[in-house]
Length: 129
Image (cartoon, rainbow, N blue to C red; front, top):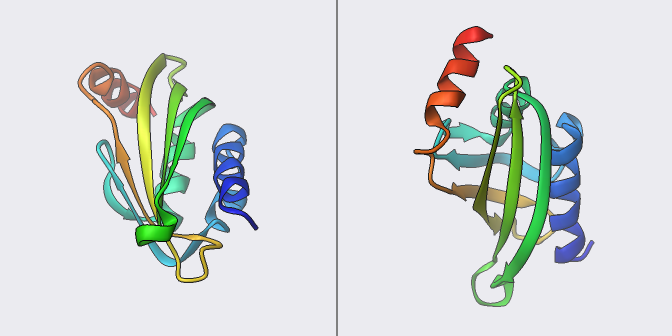
């Protein structure tokens, strides 16, 4: 699978809340670092994220490929996130992926975005659930 295909499969799984599909893109033991959820095993992170989500919509803006230099790729996209409460929050973010040795899965992901505009809505939505 090409790196571009791997990235597009990730966004597709995020958009469709395909828990098993997104988990399959991560190597065993992979970790996600999130500004809202903290550090979590990828397996657990997506179960929690999808439980907090009514709908996800991503709009890819850029793919930054540094796989030849250090085994990493970053996706820059606009994320329209409908929380479980029905509240819609939209923001730009960057997901930075460290690739597994075979470059066919992700070994680690760090999510980068400003949580200040949406933290209160996120916390209120979780309190309702």
